[in-house]
Image 1 (cartoon, rainbow, N blue to C red):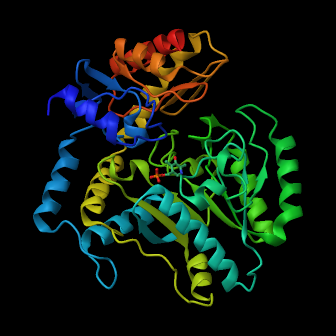
Image 2: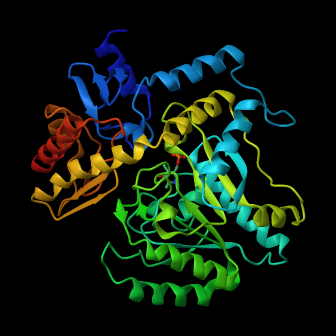
Amino acid sequence: MSAPELLAFDREHLWHPYTSMHDPTPTQLVTGASGSRIALDGVGEVVDGMASWWSAIHGYRHPVLDDALRRQTGEFAHVMFGGLTHEPAVELARRLIELTPDGLDRVFLADSGSVSVEVAMKMALQYQRGAGRPERTRFLTVRGGYHGDTFDCMSVCDPDGGMHSMWSGVLPEQVFGERPPALGGDVAGWAAGFRALAAEHAGRVAGLIVEPLLQGAGGMHPYPAECLRVFREVADEHGLVLIFDEIATGFGRTGTLFASEAGEVSPDVLCLGKALTGGYLTLAATLCTGEVAHGISSSDSGVLMHGPTFMGNPLACAVASASLDLLATGRWEEDVRRINTGLQALHDLDAAEVRVLGAVGVVRLDHPVDVAKASEAALQAGAWLRPFRDLIYTMPPYVCSDEDVATLCAGIAAAVEAG
Ligand SMILES: *Cc1c(COP(=O)(O)O)cnc(C)c1O
């Protein structure tokens, strides 16, 4: 099929994320991707400001990742994980245990971020049952969060501003605290309210689930690291399982390898995804402590009741281990700092608010963005961006050169102007 035929078929028959079949937003045809760039039909090469939804941290067609995938393809692509295991899964688990915060040494390999959050929530519920507290069936969280699109995940997403408000009445009702303050905001005031809410509902709550340090798809909202210690204290005080969803923040994005490190806090359960495979394949992981694992095994069933068909997919595990080896060189730290410096230029824009944290740059307008217009203006400036609500932002691959970062800033400026 020619490019126009491909696009016409796509428009008629394919769902894209969060779009209408009647009136879809324009879709670009990708013809290639290499390093920090993607090639678009009729446009040419542009700098990828989105890193394929924050996952392609090492860029596209990285020789080390390509090679890991090719080698595993030559062995075997997939086997079931029930009753079988393999070196790629064991090697990945070993690396994850070594890299993640202290105490997290049991690993569940899931096939997407949402599934890893479902598993984390199930872990908390089964742990409480094992502890003789089956009445604890709710979750405590904060407003403004995003944890995925499956139903339990949606139930802990922002109940008002988020994309799931249409499901109120269908979803389990969870307990929502105020969103943590912005950087430099009143942590003590927020913490007092959050502690009071936790005390009021604790008897029915199994776990506390949050995105540490940066709320992503719920509004690109960075908040002070001190809040992480408040979450840990509240969980300890009331016997809640503390779940950190680092699917967006994990693997260096906010400036530390894991966002939880900024608050020197270890959760009881940790969700990883997105950048886990360097953006090559879908894979996620839920890590928990021995205590949580032991509690689950003391529940009625004695087992963790979950097991996806493609659990521990060897291709995905092999490429994930190769991505972690690239991170282990420490080069990412310098790259993230360098990108952070380049993104400071966003502060010169005329916008309602600018937020820069690690390799994340966010510009908030005082009105909803015209996504089609803003994206088109960014493309003309050489950048691929995907704004949402009133936000134009970038989370680029760490391999972006200083010139690429300047292009992204120019793209954001053009999008602000147009959108
Ligand atoms: C993207 C994301 C998810 C969902 O992951 P999927 O792989 O899209 O299912 C969950 N939590 C956070 C914080 C995310 O950013």
